Length: 565
Ligand code: ADP
Ligand code: MG
Image 1 (cartoon, rainbow, N blue to C red):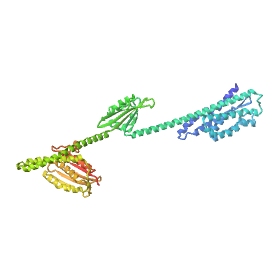
Image 2 (image 1 turned 180 degrees about the horizontal axis):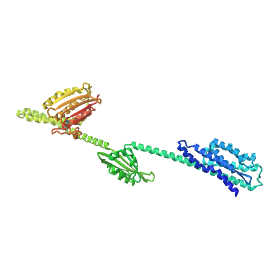
Image 3 (image 1 turned 135 degrees about the horizontal axis):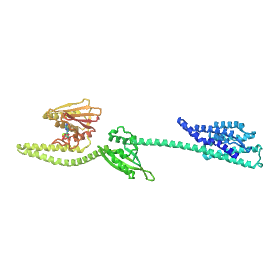
Image 4 (image 1 turned 45 degrees about the vertical axis):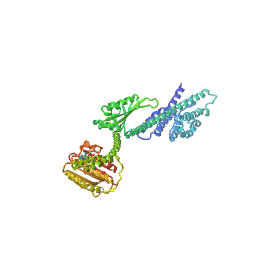
């Protein structure tokens, strides 16, 4: 019984480093990580070194001889383990310690016993294998360690025979005990490797998980930034309809509808139910559609009109790719107000274009019979008594007016590119002033002309610009009462040449300002509403811009910008 006890004691002591290894390793690891240093080989080596030194020492202290013959010392277990797993110098140090300690504790030893029982012959081999050992696989390690343990233990077991204390024939029971001894060593050795390897593996896994989670967070951050950069409002929901992710665009949109929530942060909305968050907001209906999506409904889109805004919204379920199980939903909101107005404007322009073309065709056909009518009227007037002259004049004037409208309309509808040449805007204005003066005199209005001498010649179609100035000036005069003043002014600005036509009339009410340039918009009983439409068309064909400034009761200024050629 004593024999079993002693063997067990040795096994326990020798396996001490293996049992303590997970503890020392983890503790050291935490410490190193806490200090923000590299938590790699050092803590591993240090933990193992301490325990192996202690364990070897204890093995030597409790060493004995079974039946006073077979040496019992498992010290080579921690010794070889440190030589293979630890740093080279630690292994050498422990080997030296073992060589020194052995004579201190061993009982009745000879030189042969010393060499055999310390396993001295194997040391160089073990140390040399160390480098290869660290790189090899787990099975490889088990094999190498077991081999060395067995080798060491066999040398120990053989020493009594070499010392001639014992012979193979004389003591069979001792021999079989020796084999049991070797078997126990091997078991202990396997346990040793298993403990160390599984700890190392666990540690490796832990490192991998850490790395993976870091990568995951980095990816998630990238995704969030990508979502934030999108001009779409995006909300991600989990299976229960709670918000799990939200992007900047959506947050901004949400803030515009929640006045008290200027300071609202993303975190305030996360994990809340969507219908809860959106209640009272114009895009509320998304919430109910998201619920349908969570029940597996496929993608749904809808247009929502709210507070002058038009939103294109789409909701779709998020599904697992194989099983199609719904694991969440995504809602996307796009503000398409601008797009929609553009589309409407384009529609409008297209319709106008079509109407214009038709009308142009008809008016062209009307012009010819009218010319004939006018010709014959002229003839009849000459042949009629002078008392009827007055009537003829009225009829002819009205005919001329109708002709004027048709001409305006035709040039508006034709929209052909201008044939422009280099000419001076001032020359055109000067040519027109006598005509305007005469008109103004009749109405009792004054006309002022302010020309900027720095104005360079421009690429213009003189005929059309004349029409433009006349139209703007006529409008101004028609708007003013007696004693009003019409001002024609030119200026050179950074963006181009400016022509300003201002009056001191009643101004234009804000509601009418957008409609001014639409064909047929007029507030006059005998107006055609084509004057400004024609002006716009002329200016655009010259590559310029026209705008209006008006103060009610004070006057109006039309500003035309021509590009400097
Ligand atoms: P029309 O002169 O035949 O009415 P226009 O296109 O030239 O058509 O002008 C459209 C409308 O714009 C006018 O009916 C008038 O109400 C307004 N308008 C244009 N110019 C002025 C101005 N200088 N002051 C006030 N109202 C103006
Ligand atoms: Mg007019």
